[in-house]
Amino acid sequence: MALSVRKVDCTLDCAAPAALAEFYKRGFGYEDEPPPPPFATREEWLAQFDDPEDDADDGAWLHHPAGTAPRLFLQQVKEPKVGKIRLHFDFRITDADTPEGRWQQVVAAAEFLTGLGATEVAVATGHHVVLADPEGNEFCVA
Image 1: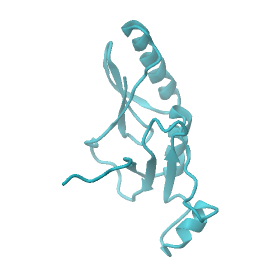
Image 2: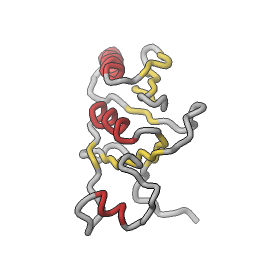
Image 3: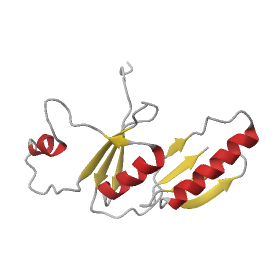
Image 4: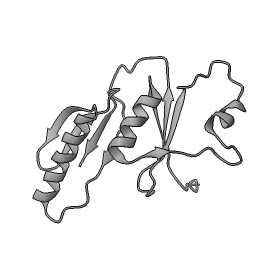
């Protein structure tokens, strides 16, 4: 039996969710996810869980307004990242008509993202660039 899945959301462990959320909002057009009804604010929604260890930066909930990317939950964890995560995002550039034009867009996107705090990890010339977000989580621009 297979599950009937409507959507896939991604959770990314991080040290500072609010700061990392800004990177994904500025870099990829993500927006803050509204709280689930009937709650007016995310804080009101969180209050129902009655966790005394919660603080203002425990998490950030993001969605892409065009619905072209998974929703993201950036979850604060106390342990530092110690290795490469086994799952990573591939952000695809789709506006070019030729391979050369697409590659130029990939390079421009990588330069834009490094300007926002990403770090270049590797380049597969003509195909993709591997970057790491400001907390070291790898992703590709292809």
